[in-house]
Image (cartoon, one colour):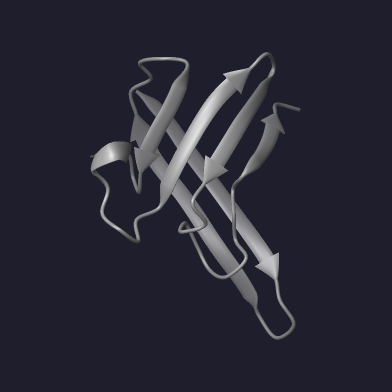
Length: 83
C-alpha cells in the first residue's frame, strides 16, 4: 500500500482555506486514481467526493484533482518532485 498525505492552504482576504489528502491506495498501473481516503474506487465515487489522479512522469508526480478536496480555491493539481 502507498500512503499519501497532503496539506494545501490558500490565503484569502479574510481567512485561510485548507484542504487535506490522506489516503492509502494500492498502485496497480502507471496511474493511481482514488476518491477521498482511497477506500472508494475513482470510478465508483459519489458526486462531491474528493477525486485524485496521480501519475509518475520521470522524476515528477503529476497530480490532478476535481477541486473537491478542500475549501474554495484549494487544489492539489500540479507537478511535484522530491527535494
